[in-house]
Image (cartoon, rainbow, N blue to C red; front, side, top):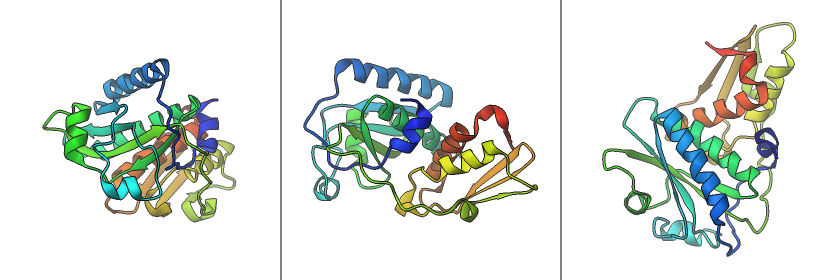
Length: 223
């Protein structure tokens, strides 16, 4: 499965099998996380076989066997959330290619425990976790807006790469499924904006990643 295919296959999953992540799969995840950490200057950390960072609200909210997660953290910089959204989207989709399922959680978890168990440096900010494992099912597609609701192309006909990019962005996870973004294009230039909100930086990074996979990064540049 490719990352592009994973975008279409991945849906939020909250009920997991009581099945550990094998050592070879964990190594692939850690290798990918290491590369993302170095490339984006963030600090993501994989935690296996531990649920102490997941408070009661998460554990009882229609969930099962929540034992593995990736902590999303980094230095307190203005673009931290966008970088973590971008990197988190990559590792979440990479996990899908390995046969795993995921659930992005931005607020309902114990940051102190996540910091301790994940070995997060004390000066880093933690912006979320990605719960990961083998789902009892593959989840269901979320209700989605139409391309014309979230995009505008200034030209006679949008190029195919732009159409594909918008389609991929509409498959990205967003808080409360609001999809509060706008993608604008003209020629080979693109701008992506997200309405201000508690998780808008993270969601902007997620949307950018999805758009780039669908459109092909070689076909456009950001304004």
